[in-house]
Image 1 (tube, rainbow, N blue to C red):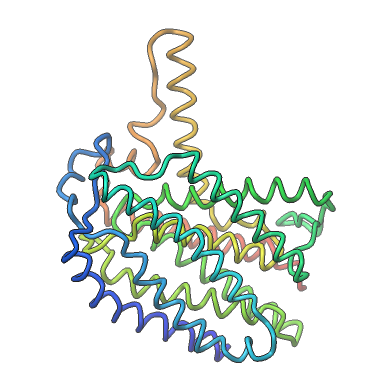
Image 2 (spheres, rainbow, N blue to C red; image 1 turned 90 degrees about the vertical axis):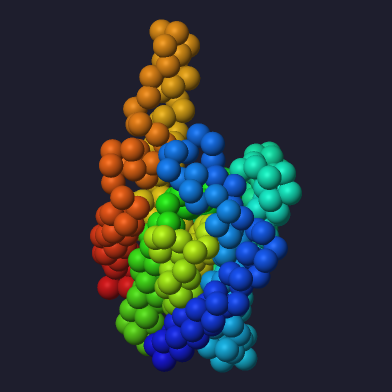
Length: 340
């Protein structure tokens, strides 16, 4: 518990200090966000706001892991380093995408196929690593039950890669309003931190100590970043930050060997993705059948629909974060039977 609190504090402070330094640098190099042309019209005023701000909380998390997690490293427990490395790999993909957007002066970076192939390769490599170190089994735990379904390794790898790529891009979709992805992810990070503490306290061991340290560092880093990212945002996390977050959240779920819990604790991410999928499918099917395309939502993903319904960005942040808190509590009870 002490190491987790230290990790939280270090990540919070370092992220805040990093924000004070990095934001002026991003402004100096004119690393301004290109706003989607098909997004809400009032978002045009955000054009030019510095992007790639994900570096702010990534730096805070790295500092926290190296300092608060040093004891675990000395004992040979590298779980937090594996999670960090996975997040950084996805963050690097996002960074390449952000750079391409800035270079082309538009909101289109790497191609969808380029990102997909890199994400799949990273996902398979990570799951194989966790399998090799014994932290991931081929048993698929079902939340709210005592059931674990054994799967053939190839099947598990395919499902794991699909789940990771889907979740990472769901987090990326959620990053469309000031502070939203950060606010929604804080309860997710707290869930994994509480899970690590409760599990270790009950078992009397330190099985998930390193994972708990990372979750605590993620919480602190995001809160430090929110100081600058809350509406009106002084900086955006960019794909650098959102893909890092997606990778980190997925890595935590696999570190606890319960990837399906992402459907519960990541309920907001799921809703954002489903709204996008439903919108596209209904649009294409209705156009093909009737010749007149129809839409279920005023705009997808879901947060833009509520924006067009008149919700302010602060209200969106408050409501979506509250829903994420409720989902995190539900997720806790969904897996509590594993150690009780």
